[in-house]
Length: 186
Image 1: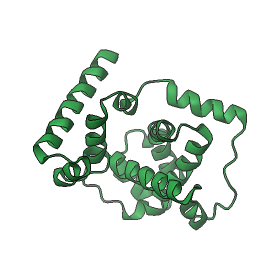
Image 2: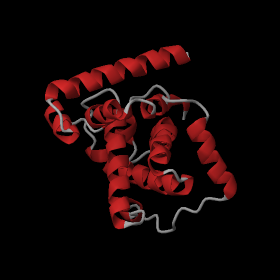
Image 3: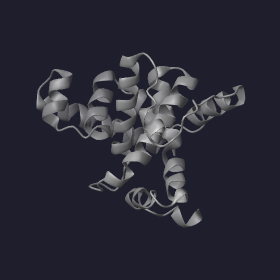
């Protein structure tokens, strides 16, 4: 597995169809930030773990169609997480379509020590997503839409009900704040 530490996200995803260790490396790279993102959104470690499992199942199922137009697959993966969370919330239960397509029939059941591990993963080391949660709502929503979802500024502005200029300013200010917080944290 050590050989995958320096591999790009695109390489890991491209190899994951025939190489279980490649996807495991990708999973380990993003488990904590995705889980943190979901816990902060839903507030329940068990539900977040279920959503996280479905997110990574979706990523594994879609790995072959991933297009590496950036250095990081994070926006793609967080887009999957957001979609999984949204469809599950609308349905009133965690959708399991991706897991079922992969033959994972049994539901994810977490014991108390597993739930504690989820909470540790989320709270152990503040990540960019933790800092993101602390931003003013307008900046946070603008960054999520522009960076994580990769929406064009036109769509960000429409979602936030503001002009494109204001949307750009919110993203710029938010990213500047994130950068400063990360530098202070080091």
